[in-house]
Amino acid sequence: MAIAGLCAGLFPFVSPSTDARYSLAWGAELLRGELPDLGPADLPTPHPLPIAVSVALAPLGAERALDAYEVLCALAFLTLVYALFRFGRALAGTGAGVLAAALVALNPRIDFFALRGFIDIPFAAAVMLAAALVGEQPRRNWARALGLLALAGLLRPEAWGLALLYALWLGFDDRARFPAALGLAVLGPAVWIGTDLLLAGDGLHSLHGTQAGADALGRTTGVDDLLPSLTAGLDSLIGWPLAAAGLLTAGWGLWRAYLPRGRRRDDALAGAERPAYLTAASLVVAGVGGFALLAVADLPLNDRYLVVPALSLVGLAAAAVMRASRSPVLAGAAVAAVAGTLVAAPADVRAIHDRFSAGRAHHRAEGELERLLDGPALRARLAPCERVVARGDLRAATASLLDRDPAAVPIADRPAPGEAGVVAPSVDGPYLLVVRCLGHG
Image 1: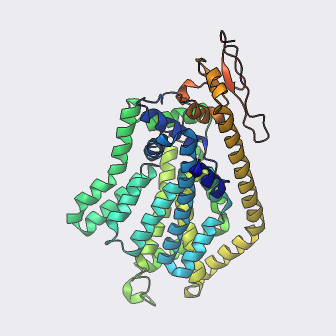
Image 2 (image 1 turned 135 degrees about the vertical axis):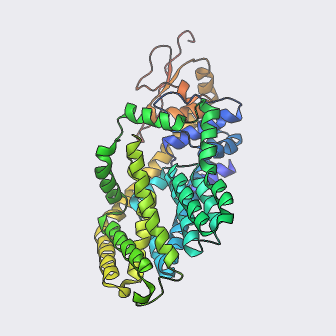
């Protein structure tokens, strides 16, 4: 109870997403020695790292495990802010690091992902911290960077390509180091495929299941929607002024990095900053390329899958502001970044306020649902019911709190005779409706 009270006091705005709830439910099942049913198309993709974390948290019980998960969500966001500081500092010094960290911390869309516990926040934190390490010392920090990318690869498969590209670069630089680098690079996909094979009997279950789910739920997919989704995604995440500033700075950095030495006006970019600019530009290109591969594979084209290239552009825009005097290109990028940020500031402040208000309301609603389902009388009434029906956004929470497999909890707006139903949580209630089970009074 002390942990629950502490978490409720420190993180009253964090309300993990439905996907996070599924991971918690699956983790509890695995701890009980049961294999979850991952077959239905309306279930989310099973991500190995959240499930492993959920197994570790399951002994705390469903409610306390959720509290601990909320703490981890908050820590992931703080890690992301720190990673952007390191990333910006590698590009253009401490001032750029502080600015990049502030821009991500005060970004309404990123704040929303953090408050809802989306895996894209810890994924981006691991990737951006790895990028900062590579930008600072690409040859000395390779093992730590690949270790972070391996962790990121247990959250989203885009990290697999980043890890492989970096391992190949290391192999060209030092062949003796390549076997170890390649081993770390393939760790993520190997564990993911092994997890799918263990839990679903299909090493490619995540791919097949996500494709089926995208089709069943009508998600935006396909090459035809790639460009609209890409442009709209970057705009929703960071806005076009910051994106344009980052792209200009990336172009300037590549030009300066590859300009023949004799024609350089200064050698600053050829020294300590050169790896950082090359890393940042590579992240943008690889991130957009990974998004394009999602389109080719008929996987959903959500804006949050562009978080890494978007944050790379934020870091580059922050570098332009701090290095505006170096070049007319950087000066123009700095003007775009500053003007765009100032113009968007009033709307962003309102959006952040709304995000935190909604997070607090969701947090309260989930707490009420937990208290209702935790009552011994209600649990006794639900226990004999073979079918417990829940609204879609409540299915995983209901399954976790009642020690059931989410796939065994049908989704419906109202229960039929002979079923017990969990209906609601709109934040303005009612939270729960129980229909007596047929033959159980």
